[in-house]
Length: 81
Image 1 (cartoon, rainbow, N blue to C red):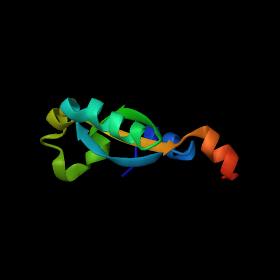
Image 2 (cartoon, rainbow, N blue to C red):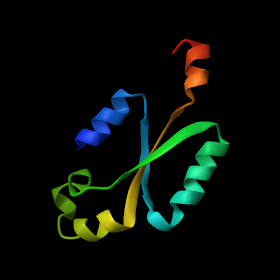
Image 3 (cartoon, helix red, strand yellow):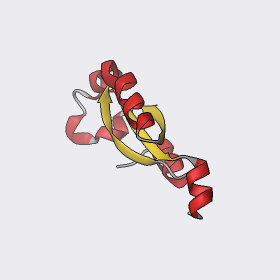
Image 4 (cartoon, rainbow, N blue to C red):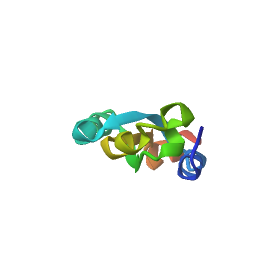
């Protein structure tokens, strides 16, 4: 299940990686940055979780964010992708 934001980011070349605990986001962003990726995050919304987790979605949405990565624009332009 994809949110509107998810679809927009993917159309702009971002790859959805995973949902991460907010207490670890800075560490994970730094890791992907060190690996040479651009990194962005998006708040998790109930639609991202789906109906099977409706009862805990409110809590999960406050504790997790979605991490997206993509190759740096300079690399993409150089490789012609």
